[in-house]
Length: 197
Image 1: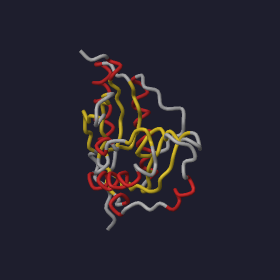
Image 2: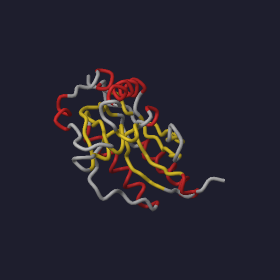
Image 3: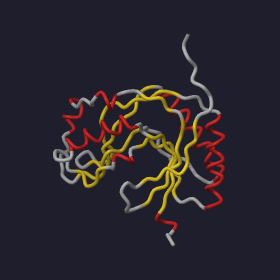
Image 4: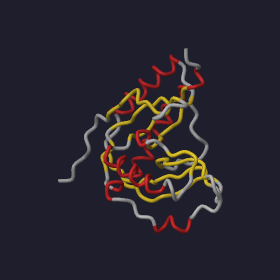
């Protein structure tokens, strides 16, 4: 029987296959140049909306119900990836990420809606401002990360191709497994995107 502490849950947006493939190819080129301890498996690329942590069985049902209702109220919107950045110490960053662009107001509104619906179920939102990103790698092993080169980096057209966000996913993480994240629920948006005549 698995210990409850080995699993964590979070709500996120999946990354489409074409963009995942583009990121995988870009990462392959950077692994030798940038020695991070751990590079994220391409199947695990996602854009987090809220981390939940441990979730009891009763809470899990409530989370699923809340996400079903939330999805019915949400209109699809477009996102794309743009720019590379880091979190953590300037000399040895903890996280390497690719940023998000596109209809960011709708993304932030969705993230706020998710946290608002999760709060009554016992899940407090992060105290830090929401900074949408897709994590690529963790724990830089050397000092003096080449920040001067970040502005010179261009991502491939496959990575920067916009996509239509049509739903949210509830993920379960399995520590020590590769890939680490398992999608256990897909909640499609039921409103149609408004088309410009």
